[in-house]
Image (cartoon, rainbow, N blue to C red):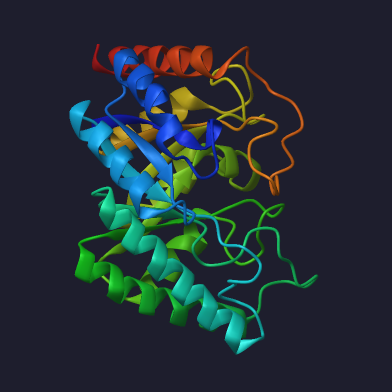
Length: 284
């Protein structure tokens, strides 16, 4: 298993600007090879400054996005669906500014927007149509889309690796794949040994999140089993640490009201040590 290690910057900010550069320096010193950078319209000048800092630190950026209610690919309102395509295209252009080769997240549905009913075939088709249009634009920029299946508390359209893989097949674009997040999988899947193979060749990205959204290894996620399955599948790609903090972001769509870590710096340092330890054990 040949992997690169990254850190999700949403632990510090929902729309990072130049103020994130000291954090990048800290993460580089801890051994991270890249970051997941949320793009949310923070401005081209801020993104260019981040891009220069990353290049100077020999780090790579992958970008992420969260869709707001007014840009929902599965809204019954066609104007809102059209807005979703425009919103994602704008995020792709921002991604290109920082040299990202991947835009990831719940690209298929606005987070926290529910119909009160199970997903419908019409919603699936609306989402598929949006993703196809966005994938076509992404292809021109050399960017892959990574669909993060999410828990039933966040979305209702795609909750499992199998469903995300089916959407990738239905979209039919070469530059779309599955993002496997251990946090969401812990809530929705039976175990990694069954969920990860369901993604198969469509698996393009992995986030490592603990069951309480805090420090890795101090919750209920089965990281050793996850790594063993990834090794069996010969996964080649990023392992990105994901944790969330209270007070970061105005909307708090994920309802993070307490911090399950001592400090962000401690969390990122302990996380990379844990990952490296598990990888070393696998090689023995």
